[in-house]
Amino acid sequence: MSCLPAAVNSPNWSSISCCKNRTGRNCNNRLSSAEKHAIIPLFPEIIRGAEQRFARLVGLVMKIYIAAPLFSEGERAFHEKVDAIVREYGHETFLPQREGGCVADLPDMIEGVPVRKYLFQLDCKHMDWCDAVLFLFDGRVPDEGACFELGYCYAKGKRCIGYKTDARSFIDGFDNVMLYGAPEVVLQNEDELRDYMKKISPVIY
Image (cartoon, rainbow, N blue to C red; front, side, top):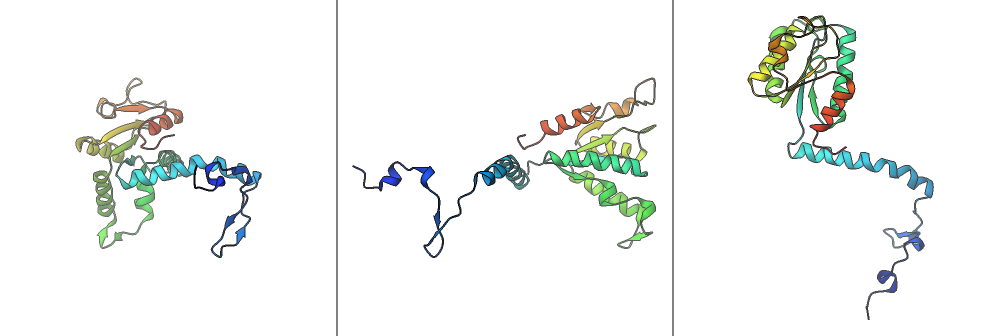
């Protein structure tokens, strides 16, 4: 015969409606049905957040450098959308327009260094930091600076991912072979971008 109280041997959870507070007095803090229904949908986000924190802790998060032009409002808005999608799947990003800015909007000197040299050093530092580069092809022709960044990362052995939503191409429907040959894949729309970011994410979705 068990020496445990009957409530422990065969608990009737539906009858439990209160708990003991620090003073030993009962406090009725049982959640209402409406509160339970409000909390339950949050569980996946809570779990995902914990997975993301763990992935960062053990170095599983992919650090992605977004290589793209940043000279018009339309370009910058598009890149912010791309950046948000990448981050949504648990990755860290470096977005030059956010971290450094556009040279035309900055003072001539930053931290005692000419602004152009400062931005070059900042971008090179983060190309070394990243695990992968996301190269945005869009434009009449791909941006010169982004082309340099793609080549730099490719030479460093980083993963290279392309993203092209623009129907224009440089040569008879094809991009320059040196650009097209570097990425492991060239994604062509938002759905493909989401699927790929999910595929390489350390977090289960």
